[in-house]
Each structure stands twice: as C-alpha cells, then as structure tokens.
Length: 445
Image 1 (cartoon, rainbow, N blue to C red):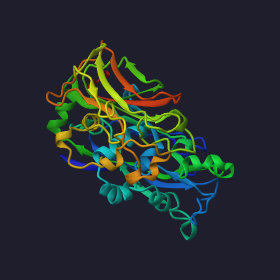
Image 2 (image 1 turned 90 degrees about the vertical axis):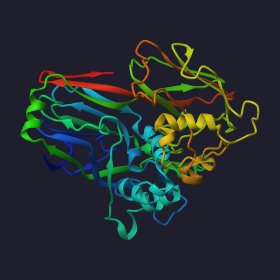
Image 3 (image 1 turned 135 degrees about the vertical axis):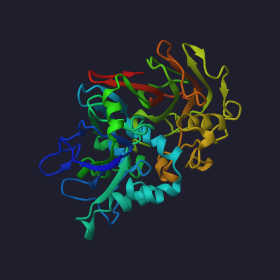
Image 4 (image 1 turned 180 degrees about the vertical axis):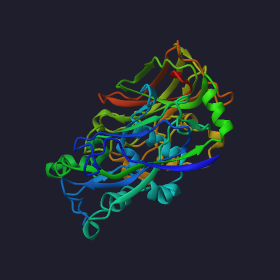
C-alpha cells in the first residue's frame, strides 16, 4: 500500500475566494470524489485564513477604545463559526451524519477533553483558541489591525465527528461509499460575535450599535486528507465483496427550551445503539444576540441572575428511570447556599462525552464549574463556566441501548422560579452502521 495526500478547494467558492455569512455564502462544501482509495478519516483537515471586521473594510480597533467591544468565544475558536456539519455520500446524497448546533457541541467537547495548556499552545495556532477572552480579543479578533492590516489568522483544524473519527479506513470506490460530500454551515454573525461587556451594553446604545455590522470572513480555504492506495489483492476484496459495512459513532443533536421548576424533556430518538447523552444550557435571550456570548455554557439562572440550582436529576427510558433507577439528589437540595457543582452531576456530564476512567486531560475544575450570578461568565477563568448534565449508557460492551421504540427523557427539579426561557442543547452519542455495495448505501441507526 502507498499513501497519497489530497488538497481540495470548496465547490461553491466565489470568484474572490472569500466566504462569509454576511455576504451570502452560508455554506462551505467540499467533495471528495469516488476513487479506489481508502480515506483516513482522522487525517481530514480544514485549512484557511480567518479575519474579523467591525464593518466593511474596517478591522476591529487595536487601540482598545470603549466603542470596540467586539470579541468571539475563546474556547471554541474557529469552530464557533460552524453551526452545522453535514456528511453525505456523492452517489445518493444520503445523509451519513448531521450535527446541528455543531459549535455548541464543541463548546462542551473541547473543555472536557482538552487541558487549558492545549488552548494556550497548539490549539491557539491550529484552531485560534485561547484560554482567556482578553487574549482572544488581542491575538485573534484584533490580530489583523494596525501595521498588520494585511496579515490573516491562519488555521488548520480536524473536524471532530463520529464518521471521521472511526477506526476503519473509508473505501471511496463505487462498491464503497462512492465519494463524500462535506458541508459546513456557517454561524450567523450575531451568534459568533459578542460584546465583551455583556449587560453593560444596555446602558450605551452607541456601543451596542457599533457591533451590528460586524462579520467574519474565510479565505484560501482548502480541505486536506490522506488516502491509502490498497494493494491489488486488497482492492479486489473491496470491489468484489457485497454488503460491506463500516461502523462508526455518530452524534445526533436536538434542541428544546425549559422554563419551569419542574423541567421535563422528552424526545423520540429513533436510535438503536445509544451510548450516551449530554446537554448544555444557555438563556434564550443570549442566542443570536451581539450583547452576549451565545456559545458559553452556563448553569440554569433566574431572570434576576440568581442561580436556579438543579435539586433532583432523573434520566428515563419509556417513562421509567434508566439507567439509574434512583433520583440523583444534588447537594443544593439540602444546602442551597453551596455554589459548587454537584460531583455526581458533573462526573456524569463528563463521562457521557468521554469515558471518565480514561480521561487524561480536561479543563473541568472547581473554579470554572461553580454556580454563580455573574452576568458575563466569559470574563472568568479559562473562558467561563463549564456546565451541563449527561449520562453514559454503555461503556462496557459498546453496543448501546435501544431507544428506537422508547422515548428518551430527562426530568430536573430546579429553582427556576421566574420567567426566563432557557435553551437546552441535547447531543446523543450512538453507534451506527453503514452498509454499502454497488447499488448504494444504507445507514442502520
């Protein structure tokens, strides 16, 4: 076998090579054509240049004046610009994996699986992440101003998703997946950017209005990957074998809102091999709003910013408690004044994202998971709060739990006593099987 390296440009790139949501290009599409090669999914990288503008042809003010409060989320970096990721095959355009709210997924995935030193070292170069919002402002958002007006922030990121992180190489031939279409849907500018001062903007309309024309822009985009050319014997096996399969872990995403002290969430997942599920929260008023960081992950709050502590947490399958046949009662149920996150809730959240016993690095710590009444969490340590709830269903057999005929449910008794609608982003990790042959593909969920 021999290896080849490919470099692709977007199929829908405009004539000037610049792509931005504001200028009417909300989707970046790449096509890896059908060929008798094996794709190494973990080698796929999105590369390019990134630049921020306070308005057309004007970069943010590097002098740091009070009118320039433009910033982006420091923990997600360039991933914050990707609202959805869609992977399809070329022949049938069948959807293999579709992660909605991809940037919210990364807002939990990155801090749980990475250390703060990662953000300050290689991630700051490859993904434009930092561990501090002020550093993000100076090094990335303002990194193209003054005497560096022609300099761009370059990046090269892998794209975490179940399909590309599978263990098996992906056969691109007609008897295999028959080529891949990869689409990245861009995040609206008012969700990607936010004011550093948060609520302080309400007192000064001039500062708020100064952000309304802000936008980000990509240029020189390309997708790189490594292909393996199979030897003749292996190729013959791949092209002659009918009904080959490819197993991978997929991420499915859902959204709902909660606004009561007895928050109940129900979804018909339609998935047979669910391995885990987790969710993060943010007040609805902070979504698509320049005034707030729409990518921060916060615990529940009331309208007056007082913590709406989770007192009891229950996971259900078909209305029955599962996999834990008991109520998880947090420390806030008996001691509301305790601001530390309940260890059982926090460990369950982390365990749902990656197996807790095998975790080698993380940003999760007591000083960024406590529950507070801060208006602007992104001004705090390591980019703000890390919050969420989750449950792992199967970390032994790897076969998961069948939710194809049973509803998935969460019940939270909390102190949300005021009118403050809160968005809940749910991500479900499941095992899926791709069956392919010369007549097409079929996804078994």
